[in-house]
Length: 108
Image 1 (cartoon, rainbow, N blue to C red):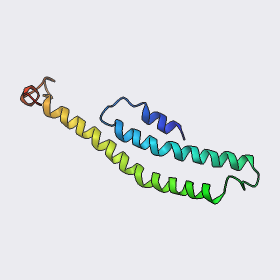
Image 2: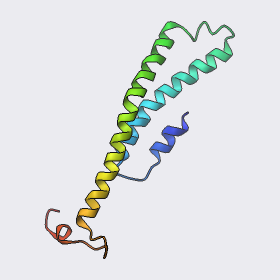
Image 3: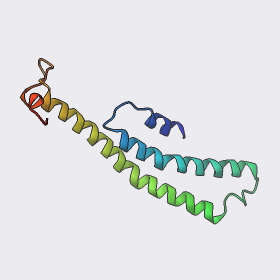
Image 4: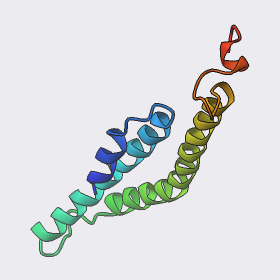
């Protein structure tokens, strides 16, 4: 489960960096918490120490936050990419691939 944040953090596109970092920030603690609960469950046959109410509640809260925040971050990431592409299309002529009048204007 930690491979997803690693993939998100190694992306090269600048316009989607903030949403990818946000998704990783939410995914890493959740993955670590679930890993601790799983290891604790296998380590202790009865899992009495690691399935204390505090770990169960923390896992539930982390799950709710991830389920509610990650779709918004994905939409944000897609919107950022599309906005960057649109900005590029505004200042560069598609046929010749050189700056148009908006790209050559000062302050563009």
